[in-house]
Every structure is written in structure tokens, then in C-alpha cells.
Length: 164
Image (cartoon, rainbow, N blue to C red; front, side, top):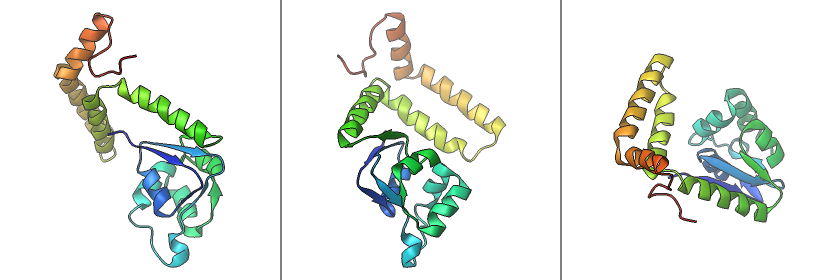
């Protein structure tokens, strides 16, 4: 599944950590963000890998070791927020657009893409090339790939896509 987090109000501690684990994050400008665990004597261990993946190790250090609150605007600059919007209504509109886009995609292809992206994190370039080639070849031969190519050639929507 594609996971999209909508942040409004406060995204602090585990809430921000969960959002970092998502595929996309939409936040309204007034959202307050931060990782407060260390300020209460707790190591943010479960969410640390997701925060590091989103912002890199040096910015993650700042966010975790200072426990400072920051704005969604700063969060967007740092890579924590993918879509910065003015308010909740704009967030819901952005979400609806993402949902429409995702529904045009083959569910199995999206699932395979997420697996590929996760596996690539642990491999070196030659292994990534081989993995990507296998994933592509497998998807072209699978039902969704065949349906996708056929629908393209026949100038129609594939059977998994939303019908307008």
C-alpha cells in the first residue's frame, strides 16, 4: 500500500516518526514538528532509521539530540515534508490528487516498486542493476505488465485504473 500522512497541528515524537516511515507527507504550514524523546530521557530508537533515511544522519542528529520544535516549513526544507500546504483543506485536496494518481498505477507494480526501493538500500551499484533488471523483466511478463502494455497499444485505460 502507498502510505500518505497528513500533518496538521503538531507532529511530535512518535507521530513525526511514523510520518517519516510513510511514502509521502503532506503538512499544513502551521504544523509544529519535533522529536521530544530525548527531552524526557528516552532514545528515539524505533523511529531513528526512518528519520535518518528522510533527512540524513547530520540533520537527524540535530533533530533528535536537541529536541527542538520546528515548523513544517523547516521540515519541508529538511526533507520531512513532501507537500507543504496552507491549511487542512489544501492538504485534503493534495491527498485526493495523490490518491487519484496512485489509483492509475497497477497495485502489484507499486508493491514491487516499494520492495525494490527497500532492497536497493542494502546493495551496491552492480547488485542494484541486476535487481532492477530482474524486477523489470518479471513485471513485464506478469499479468499487470501485459495488461498495461495492451492498454497502451489499444489506447484505453488498464483494468486496474480508476474510470472517470
